[in-house]
Image (cartoon, rainbow, N blue to C red; front, side):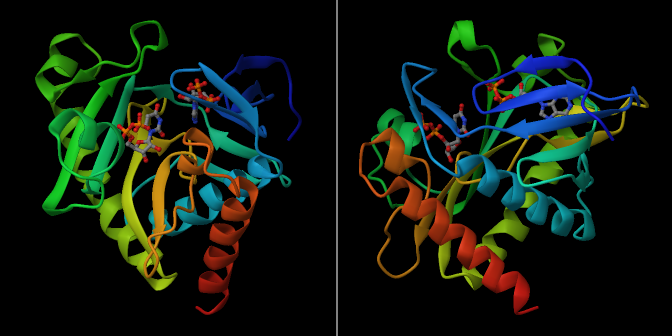
Length: 240
Ligand code: ADP
Ligand code: UDP
C-alpha cells in the first residue's frame, strides 16, 4: 500500500491517505514536544521505537478482546491502520499518582491507588486539553452515552493487559493516555499509539523513569531509556 496525500501532520506523527478510503498510513517522527508544544526537541530513534512498540502491544490487545486500528506494519516507522473518526477525548488511566494528578490533588508522586482511576480530557490544543467528565463529553456531543461506556470498559481492559505485560518486563505501569475512534460503521476501536510518549513506565526495582518524563523534566538519558524499554518488551515477547 502506497502513501498518497498527507492528511495531517501532528506533533509526533504524520498521517497519509491511501488508495483505500478506509485505510491510512501513519508515519512516526523523532520529534518530541511537551507542555502543549512549548518544549520542543528530538529523541533520536523514538519514531521507530514508538511504531514497533505500539504495534506489538495493539496486536496483543486484539487477542485480549480490545479491537484496535492496527492493520500491518509497513516498515520501521510506518504502519497501515484503519481510518477512524477520532473521539476527541484523551482517556487517562492511572495506577499510581504522578504528573498532573500529583500536582492537582497534592498526592506525592509514587503513591499507589487503592484502585485504578480514569479521567478524560477534551482533545483541544487551543484550550490546553481541559479535563472533562463523561457527562461533559456526552453533553458536548463528543460521544454518546453508549460509546463512553464502551470506551471505559476497553480502557480498563487495556490497563489490565498492559499492567501485567509490563510487570513481566520488570516495569511498573504508572499511568497512560489512549485515544479511541469510530470506524465507518460506528464500531469503537483503540487508535493512535501506546508508547513511552504516552505511558509512564518505571523500573520495578529502582523506580527509574523509562519514558518521556526524562525529556519533559530534563533528566538526561532519554534515548537510552527508550532503547531500554523497547529491549525489555522484545525480550518478553521472544520468551513467549
Ligand atoms: P497530535 O495531533 O496530538 O499532535 P500526533 O502527532 O500523534 O498527535 O498525530 C496523530 C494524529 O492522528 C492524532 O490527532 C490522532 O488523534 C490521529 N489518529 C490516530 N490514529 C488514527 C486513525 N486510525 N485514524 C484517524 N486519525 C488517527
Ligand atoms: N499524556 C499524553 N498526552 C497528553 C497528556 C498526557 O500521552 O497530552 C500521558 C502522559 O504521558 C502520562 C499520562 O498521560 O502517561 C498522564 O499524564 P498527566 O495528566 O499526569 O500529564 P502531564 O504530567 O504529562 O502533564
